[in-house]
Length: 322
Ligand SMILES: O=P(O)(O)OC[C@H]1O[C@](O)(COP(=O)(O)O)[C@@H](O)[C@@H]1O
Ligand SMILES: [Mg+2]
Ligand SMILES: [Mg+2]
Image 1 (cartoon, protein in one colour):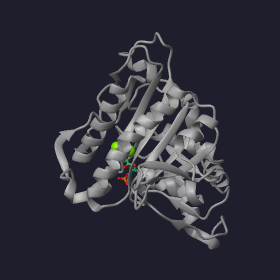
Image 2: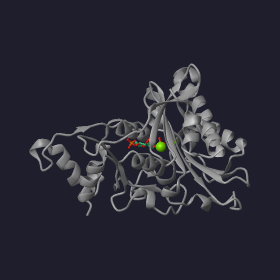
Image 3: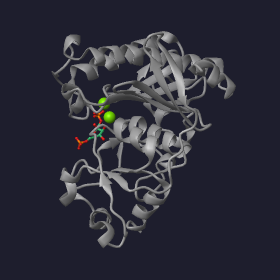
């Protein structure tokens, strides 16, 4: 089986980009080890702190963030980083041209129940003379990402990665510490009978989403004429991995539960990298009104509605939003 670096070199990635991706993965291997140690790691449970978004930080959120931040800033490959767990961006090498946005640990509520979590990352470029201290360098639409990926810490540790030439899946060989190519090109089936949504928010959805899900639930007796199955892992990284593996529709739509927070998922380090991975595997990623990768971000922790997955099913869902 092929190791990651030669695969990236064959794709025409620069030496620097390959090194940057390997640097991110070095931190992810350490996170994988800590997650695998579970209760023995001493980092389960919450801290007494909240992040800038008002969410309680888990000890593993903080540790994962520190590992990624330290290794990236020390590497010299990045001009700046943006993280879910950092109030603002953090400057790195002023002469570098890469910037990285990441969700150090996605699915935090799963940590204490030994369920799926992962790390999501997005890599973009900036001018050499751009100001490393200016958060605005991150405000680029997702179609400008040069690479995006996630590492899923499950029964095995897997990497889904795209540099714009398809989406590949690697598995961490823990005996050697290498990511090996185990799925050359992910291809999401256009049709599906599976969807993922947090149904406890149903009464807060827009009428369009209420109608769409009602028709899915009506099954073969309803207008869709087929029965659907439902799954919810409560970690976007796990739900997206299922969609990449066997198709499906995943959505975290707009809701009115908290009038100050109509959307849950973050654009720069959740929606954008996942949208690139999904599109590169033949799927679609939309908000209901626009393609996720075309959104012009206004701030680094911006949230968006997300509807992604199997092409025909996402289009069916969008049909209700017209
Ligand atoms: O708690 P809910 O409503 O099921 O939301 C789950 C969603 O929240 C998230 O866990 C948010 O990510 P973080 O854990 O990084 O904050 C997504 O991964 C997931 O899809
Ligand atoms: Mg997350
Ligand atoms: Mg997180």
